[in-house]
Length: 192
Image 1 (tube, rainbow, N blue to C red):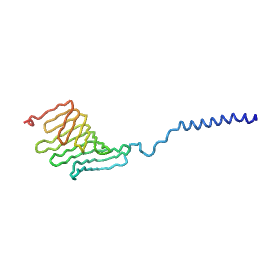
Image 2: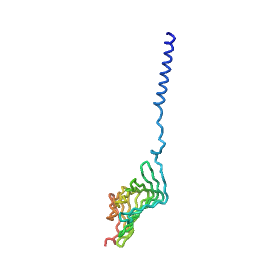
Image 3: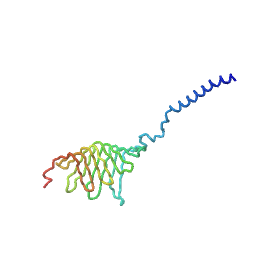
Image 4: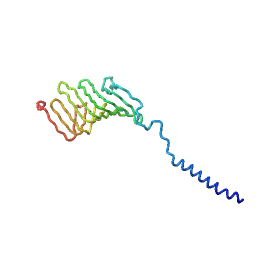
């Protein structure tokens, strides 16, 4: 009996050490990294020379979006645009062209965030000269024909120019409202 009791103590110590070793291994092990790509921000497809046209219910062209390159990201269902150009062509109104170095299209395409040398050009019509807007960023809502920015803005039309910080645009009403720090020069011939 004495031999059995002297063997129990070392065996119980070895079993305890083995259990602690297994516990420490699982307690300190890092979880496996996800390898399915769901949490990565990599494009699942890239398309060059893209043209997207939006038609109304009657089949009339409302606007066109052109980009040198389009990259779609599945993790947030967003789309990056390289050198996007948004063109509104509607009967009875001058054409409006919006260009930028980069853009980001929301998942439902209801919003386009433009950045980098953003230019807006409203072509001349019988009553008005061409209008040019320059800013560093602009958010466009193509279906609503509205846009806005909180950045510095410079607007020129003929010999007149105006600048400010922040702008609200409504293409249907043809209004460009500067929000703060507005200053400018108006051509006196336009006032007659």
